Image (cartoon, rainbow over the protein chains, first blue to last red):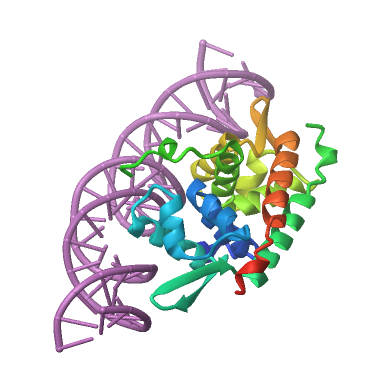
Length: 110
Length: 110
DNA sequence: TTAATTCATCGTAAATATACGATGAATGTT
DNA sequence: AACATTCATCGTATATTTACGATGAATTAA
């Protein structure tokens, strides 16, 4: 990675899209988000019960999702309750929606 | 990566979402897709003119997008004309749309 | 045939991602 | 105070990603 990203001058939405997409780029994180997007649960412990992976691994994936802004954690000692970050979720929905809706390459003939 | 993905038993849509999201997980690939989704161009050579990266690197990113099914290449010797893969694009649009629309975690109180 | 053009692939170095178990921090319980 | 519970973080090994330049394959042009 010799060339830094800033050399190209990406727009904010390009960065935001890439960051969120990267966070979605692993099936277990899709699974986690689907579980959190449902109405059933929000605790980390429940996730470790539902997903056959080490607790540390799940925590790592939760961290990635949190850093991408897709989820948020609320401390409820000694547990941590994870939820969809609704504001950013809506933002992601809008960004991806606009992105996919922008397809208008009719003039290429392919 | 000691645990294989198949141990968990992901659904088809989970895999498909993750694969496409992973392909979207780099800003230069977002940029490329935006350029291709526009009506301006489709040739690799034009992309190398528009993006300050080595030709080999751009080709590598194009390969990633192609493997994810988001674009397709049409040989027009000695050039290659790249286009959005419309069918899969629509599929991705639907998958991401459904995914983000599934947020109904009202019962969690977070 | 020879040269030029276009693009993919190879080889490589460095960075990042992904899994695990072990440990530690924070809080509640006895 | 001592213990248990829950979760994050550390350390580590391996795999993947990402960038580059160099080379090769395919086709067109001279």
